[in-house]
Image (cartoon, rainbow, N blue to C red; front, side):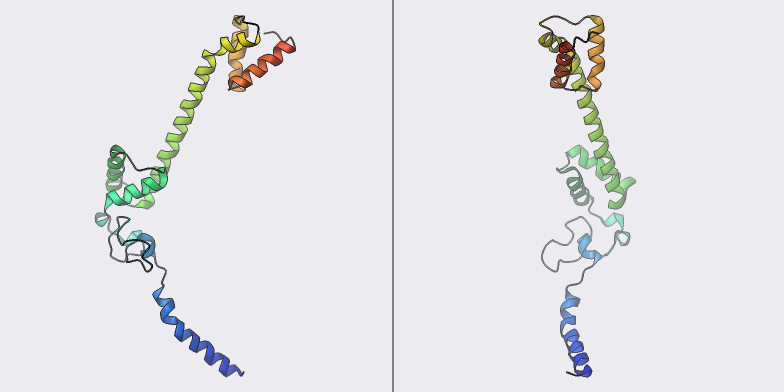
Length: 184
């Protein structure tokens, strides 16, 4: 086969498949759901953006965004659940007032999620420490044949909560100290 024949066949194939390639375009309008789906995977406007074919957030007037849908979809994606009525109202107000795009609202939601996780972890640590302090006498008594710790023993074991934060770890340390005659 000559070079001319190869080039001719290559161009012919390109011309034949060009309409197919053009109809399956990949555009920002599909990411934002601002144009009809080529494959019926979504409904135009289901993310809260207008069906105007916009290919980027910058092309969308914030006043035309259906805020409840956009905010609740983002909240569900980030927090893994639907927002309460109060949360929904809060984030809708934030969107309308100072975060007029998802690119600004998403980091704010992530910050709040991380802050809530940190606060719940800190609360769990405080509660765990309180429980350890409350059960210190019973843990000590279980190891030391029912006796109550002296003031210095109690102070020592309370300080050990930092490195022995669970009852099994604390009781294990107490057993070690008892077996090795380590006094406090």
